[in-house]
Amino acid sequence: MIRGLLLVAALGGATASDDAKDLAKALLGRTPGKPETCVSPSRVGAPQVIGDHTLLYRDGSRMWRNDLPDGCPGLDDDAIVVTEVYGGQLCRNDQFYTLERTGSTIPGPRCRLGSFVPWDKRR
Image 1 (cartoon, one colour):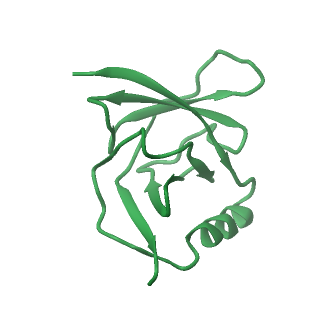
Image 2 (cartoon, one colour):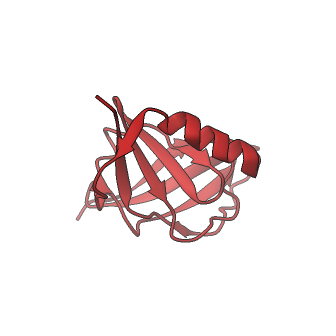
Image 3 (cartoon, one colour):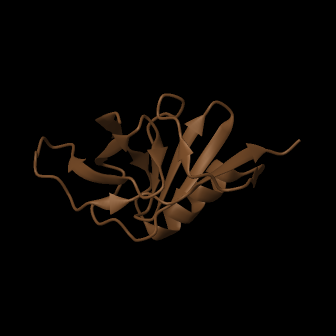
C-alpha cells in the first residue's frame, strides 16, 4: 500500500454568509451526481474551502463537493490543507489537518473527508 502526504493550499470564504455565496457561485449551473468513495489526487487541484464543513475540488470542468462528516476547527481561507493519502487515492474517511500559512509547524486537529459528489455543468 502506498502511503504519503498530499500538501495543498486551501482557498475560500471568510464568513457564513460569504460561505453560502461562494458555494452557490461555485456550483451555479451544475447538477450533482452519484457520490463516490475516492478520487485521484493527481486529477484534482487544491481544495477551495467553504467554511469548516465543505471542500470543493476541481477536475477539469467537473467539481467534486466534499461535505465533511464533522466541522473542522482551523479550516479557513488562510489554511494549508495536509491530506494523508493511502493507496494512491483521496478517499472518504481519509484524514487531513491544517497548518497556518504564518509558518507555524503545529498542526491543527485531524479531520475526516466525506464522500465525493461530482457536480457537472448542465447540458
